[in-house]
Length: 70
Ligand SMILES: [Zn+2]
Image (tube, rainbow, N blue to C red):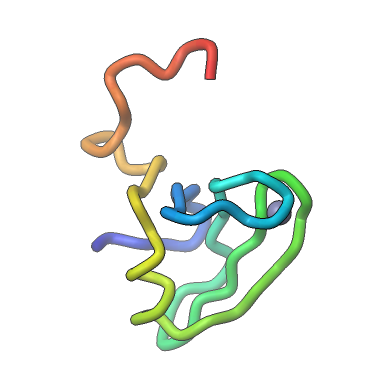
């Protein structure tokens, strides 16, 4: 999966705050991501992070057809 700094990703499981969208702050062996809704930052190994990602919202080919009203 193509994951880069600045990308917004949709996770399979929601954060306790209810958000599933996270922003990638650092990419590499370990990823640092920030919850879009509550601003909480977490760091986790790439393999674990990739498993939890449902889709990368910042990649055009992954964008849903209609995202209005979301
Ligand atoms: Zn959160």
